[in-house]
Length: 170
Image (cartoon, rainbow, N blue to C red; front, side, top):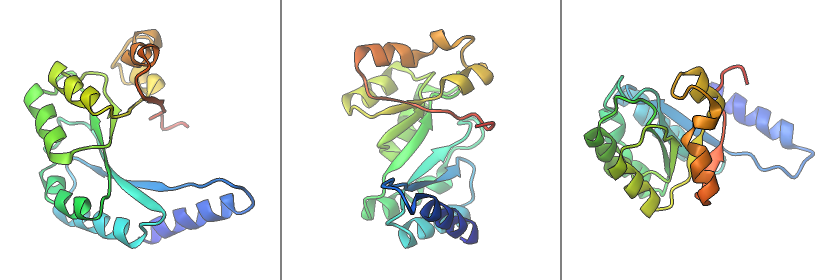
């Protein structure tokens, strides 16, 4: 909590003489403990005016997100949106992707490079924005070159895409 308060204070100071409005999304790795998931929800609720959602992240093969799934009703009761990293690994199965989409009911998708057809249909039917990180997708060997990234076709088609970075150097 002290770290979050420091970040929020820094944002407040940095935006003091501007018209910028900056908010925060807290993140949980899929293999986070139940205690950490519950503490994260508590912090989101406590700082709700400046913390606006939860991001479920990290390699989908490293954890089944079961401890995070348990807190979803608590988030939904307060209309706290979830962003879900999905399609980040070639090895993700259709069953896994569809289970996570149904459980988390995300409002935004992170990465989306390796989405199965059913997941694409589910996401596209809801017009969920997909945040796609071209440079980190190349660095992580999801694609060989930026021009091969699926974001480009989505952008050309007019689909809502947020071009982002997941690059730790930035």
